[in-house]
Length: 97
Length: 158
Figure 1 (tube, one colour):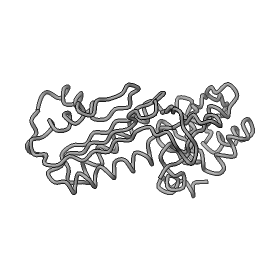
Figure 2: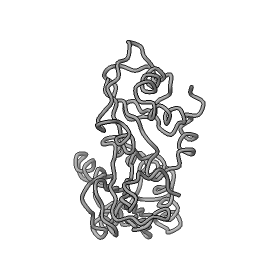
Figure 3: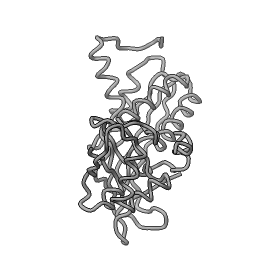
Figure 4: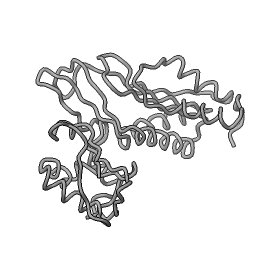
């Protein structure tokens, strides 16, 4: 499964290209995050701190969201104009783990 | 239903017109043309409020020589469309236009434009402020500033 990267994440990952992650069938966003934490610890730390969120099919995903091979998945660092805290609170992401 | 609109047209042209009111684009835009785009949507408009964001040469105590915007193609447009539609629902306004540029932008150039037309100024001002605040919160666009210390990704702005 390809994971799109944006902004600062492009400079954190060697090559700055999309990440490739293998997930088993029925894998969830939390499994994806776990794989990234192992392969890219720096990015994993930002995910853990909720500074980077996961979107699935262009919507912010919960950690329990089940992923399909055809899903469009991206990692979103804090936007240019938004405070990450307000963003996470508004999206209800603080309690999703 | 909003009264006083000049154009009715077929559904295709209405859709095209609506798509011109929400854009993420690399090229610069003409404020006059965009203002006219909003003004021409309704003869009932009596007040137009505008916010124009431009590239400044200083940020968080650092000199900035240029900047570049990354965006999530598709999702960025989707969020701008949601902002326009919610503004039309939640405020007493007649039209709203939301544009954002991406790619390299020189100091002094235009970055983002919000134009809101309403019968009265108070509604136009309120909706315009809400649109830009919401855009900064939910639109997947990222800014990289070039400074003497190197390139810096900007995480947040008030």
